[in-house]
Length: 612
Image (cartoon, rainbow, N blue to C red; front, side, top):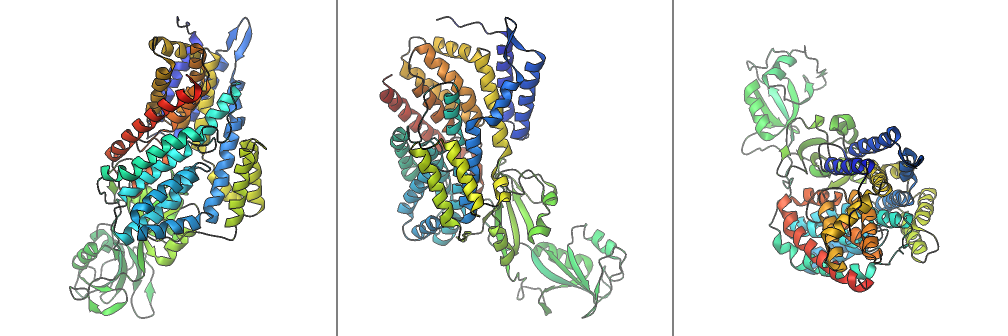
């Protein structure tokens, strides 16, 4: 079998595809920006150089715009918003409470129950809100029963990925593969069509995560594990003859290196001075300040002052009278996609003013062991970053009630409203209608979204925040690249080349090799990109071999979902990486064996199911 000869358009599309895959691996470039650049290059290229044969335009820019109206994309967006309603109404709180109580009594069985529940839930909704729901529960349980959170957080996150493989609505990748196959006139997969192979192979994977994975993971201290407040409110009483006596406020701040945070200046019991740079500080004045104990003692000596607790003006701070931080608590805020902090700085989001919380430190998810403690307000935050904040218990509770924030503070309180049962009922109807074939999942999800909004389960603001621009753009761009690869014949050329390279090997081995290729790709680039580009090639390979395309389509689906081995393979991996204090090597320790188990399992069961 000789490979066909690709034309200039096909070669250009292949080069652009390789360049796109390179851009998608660059953490410094937002995914939506990379996608837009590739999409514009593709559209502009086919506008300037039309793909014509015999005077007929075979592929033009308008063909690529069809991705915005693709049925799979519509279903993905609708399901993201419907899933958001379950999250904001606290519809899964009863399950979370049961999990929390189980961890307090029988941690071993609780881990198995957590993995199973995570996998089952992920079969019907996006796994991101499930991970967001369970993370505070597991952190709180770890604090109470003294077990390492690193032993459960990563297995839980990977279990949701396994569960997401099992139905056509489990992940956006599944919907995308099924949609592309349908658009190409291939078999229309049902909701539960491949649940059996996933149950068998995934069951083995869950047993590995339960019995083996915790033993492979070293105890990791979460990046923000310190639970004692770090910033204290205090008073500095200015002494006569000290440096600050008779100096302007600007001179005092300059002496302190510009880092002294003064809330207010009190001269008498009833007189408070404006914090003007020219105001003259006098002996007897009280500066109400906040900082770490070490810095406050340094300022005490530097300015010639006496340090007191903010509520005790009689006893100076010493070994017998330490600093106190009444009513202050610490919490960790994990930056997630859709959060007001995502891809913004704290200054731009007006975080301190809006929430009454003081940012203390930042842990960057994509640079493990990197904790930033300088000027946090100007740093652009990314998904998975963890921000340590301090404030009153009321301010932290208000932040937790904000449905767009993921707060880890060691408690199990979760939002719940009287809309929770209603949201669960609507979600059940969406799944049931698709399962019995009454309507396509795209239609049932849209109807469910409308019901969520009409019944008050989902405000429009939350619905809009649930949409992920990076997900939309990567899907549209990947669909366009897939269409270009197919339309120019490049997909067929790659398929023939792959088959020729594997000539002499039986179809089951070729299937296994192709699935492994997709698995490697999905751990490097977006799983949606890998799926959209790989599906047309898989169908072409099946045609070249003269066998059913269904097992090759499922090979793409399973391979593109096996993003276990790197923290960047899937967005939930970043979340658990931050919360569990994991390093890159931890994902390799657990992810590589799990990938091998799943790959070998599917390599055995798919040929058996489809008589290859």
